[in-house]
Image 1: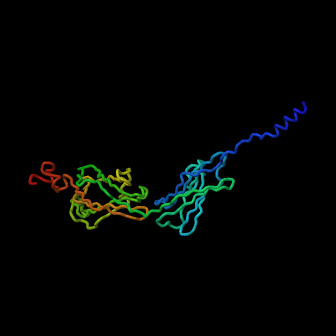
Image 2: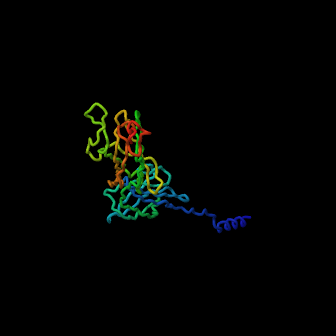
Image 3: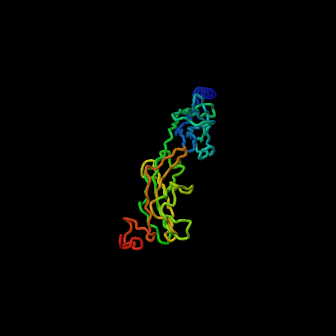
Length: 294
């Protein structure tokens, strides 16, 4: 019995003991992204890091960008700060403002992720900085004629379409200017509403509040709809009539501007202004202005 026991122990000692295989552990990089925000003049870096196996979260994540021969090292974070949208979701990012404006061109970005064991994982992406493109006013929709109400304020509705590949946020403003030199307007020197022609020779005038508001995306590529409703004085308050010229200008965040290709003429009239507007009024529609001889 003693011999059998010794043999059994020797046999057990000679056999290989079972082992637990090591898990494959690594950090995987995906969604590597480097983008230039022309409006904010910032660079957005982003990379998603996925831990496989029993690997811990990264110890450090950063990028290197080569600019004019110098390497810029920028740390990325996953704590909901510095442009990171959501903390602890595995996506590391940063909004970075260069010390000097970036020249137009392409910049290669190296992404680095270091684990707790000192191992480094890498990836790459390209940062593209494009030439600023000026916005263009490609269409303006407004009537050719507008009839003033006898006693109540009415509204002149205008819409315009602006094309800007840099996005609607790149458009600082879209404004209108008016030339009223060819209108019949009230003479401020007299108490009555006498409407005289040629009272001013100011050319185009504007006001800081004369800006069209953003409405919605346009139907074309990179287009944006703007609009405004302009209050028009009634005839009873001596609202001016005649020909008004409109001009439209837009300006973007880079300081680039554009003027609509043509001046737009608006014929303003109203029954009771003392003038018969050809094509809009006649003796049947406004005997007060047109009488029976027109």
